[in-house]
Image (cartoon, rainbow, N blue to C red; front, side, top):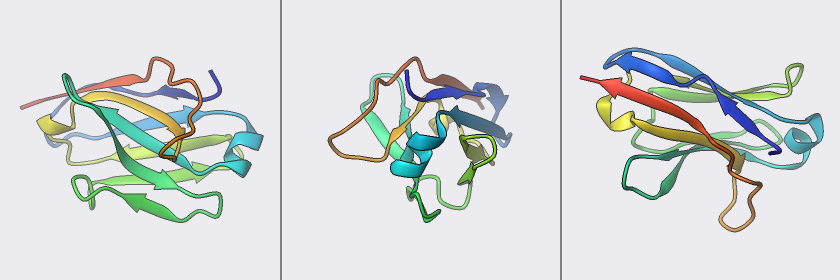
Length: 115
């Protein structure tokens, strides 16, 4: 697996988590990276992206609550999640920010938000 997501857990509504996506320096230099969320029974949706130049985008459903960032020294991309809601529950994956080309998805990291 080229990218490994971690940092999930169980939190109460209103809480915060920071997810980490670790990979090689080459991957983060060559590809825009996205965080995806798959809620139970739903398709996998893109929630945030960061380009190789550092430009970020977040979905409307998480705007103002989630922030994506990159740390070149750690070869990592992070998803900072604040004011979590039960609707944020799901398995979070990191991968190329793409409509067609992806690395292996791996296991992802589970986030569970209770009300």
